Image: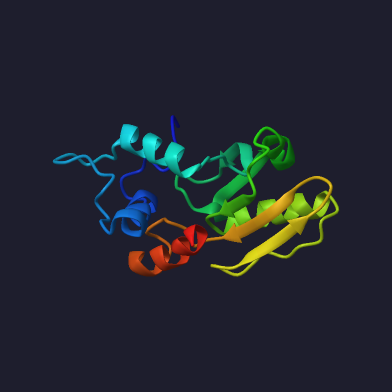
Length: 159
């Protein structure tokens, strides 16, 4: 995948459009069923947003995006990644599997945390990293929540 959330039926960029521009179609190409990558890249740079997965290598056990059928072969070394971004003080997970993975990662590093509820956060203060971990709802349409409600949660990140 060349960039994050390119899938037309995933609502991540529509959520961002609602939050920042009051227009869920803001990042969509006019008359095409695709997102405007250049507009998104500019927006992310302006907002200081970066993206990465909690796993570097996965095996899909079924031919779908259901996390229940995802086997993580190589987890991401989150602190190694964060050390490359010394001004990053917020980490966000956007679904159950990613939240479980990062929680296990923190616990394996001696940081005793539990997975926060959707829309809530946990403060991390250790020698390895100091910051806030937020859990947001999945932006997948399979997650049973209206896009406007999802946007309310995601707006918390920018307030």
